[in-house]
Length: 355
Length: 166
Figure 1 (cartoon, rainbow over the protein chains, first blue to last red):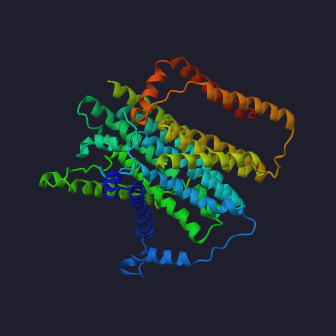
Figure 2 (figure 1 turned 60 degrees about the vertical axis):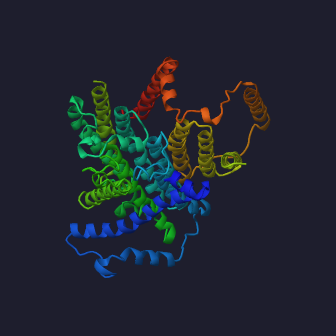
Figure 3 (figure 1 turned 45 degrees about the vertical axis):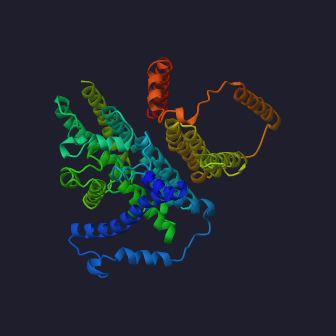
């Protein structure tokens, strides 16, 4: 995509900007539709109607909310640390948006095809942790500080099972590049990594159960990393008001919301790239059948975004199904269950790969 | 001046200015957060040197691990328990002599080392393959020893954390 715009405009700066705008639009759309969907999904699960006044089926509810948010007064407490308080939302959003630099939306629509893409995606999320700590500390509020502490502890702990599963997948695939990983799982669903990868043979069938375990581990731990229920103890309303963004309002609060939805899509995208073929279609391409080559990247983008939304839906589904964990239960799940299972899984996948 | 030069100076300025603030600022929390930008700037310079893996490791280990640990320590002691961490200067003369010696050693090492210079077109796209091969061939012993060292540290930390449970 960058190369295409570079050929078109001949300017490095313009083509970089255009390439960067696409994921930004995607994040904004995810937040816009995600907030609406969250309300509707929660309403259906609890046998309510949900938003239905603004526009048909309440579709414009999020836009109305956004307009309201723009007009809000930026009220700040007096005893906060002004500088850090203002930087924190930007840092959190920058950390969650930076992941999009390496996510391949289709074979053509990708910001940067760097070789260490997967590792990069794990690494830049640490800026989010720093931003959360910054927000919690600068607010000068015990709820904010406790929420930030909990959040950082949770994200740092759950990075370990995520990294272990990613390590197993990297051993199996032999690359860290997200676009190469997607490319390897060619266009039919039985070639996806969850079903043992593209190579047909005995190892493919041996791998299936362990891939499933790996998928479950990485899904749970990424769910914890984006602070969603059942792992939302950093912003547990009944204990901590709203956690690390208690003192924020208006557009600064909106930045936190935006980065939360951006994160949700990003982790869904990474899970779908690792296990569900990334941008590959499950049933082959219409463009191949009809002989229209330019259609294929658009189809790929469609499938990729569909898979991302599917996992976002699963996250919402879990949110309204499961109760919140306690702090000690949270740490038990991570250190006593997920990490040992992930280690065993890592060794078994390694042995099968060697076979 | 091409784009890479501009980017290099940008990252260099970020690194130097934030490092200066880390040392001079009175507030420990500010120091810790300025360290974040220092690490970020160094990672950017690694990228410009075509050391992609090292750059990501820099962010993963220093920002994601060490800095967060540092922040935890400072926040838990400074804010919750209301202990003032002293941030004044003491032992000015010995410190400046030691730092001067260290800096002299570093600068002379920088000047007199025969750095390997390669044109940008000959540098491979990624450094992971070469790094991985080196780690399990030439530097295997050091690699394993470091692994054992980390394991010992881990066991030690766990045993210290458990001690008071008699």
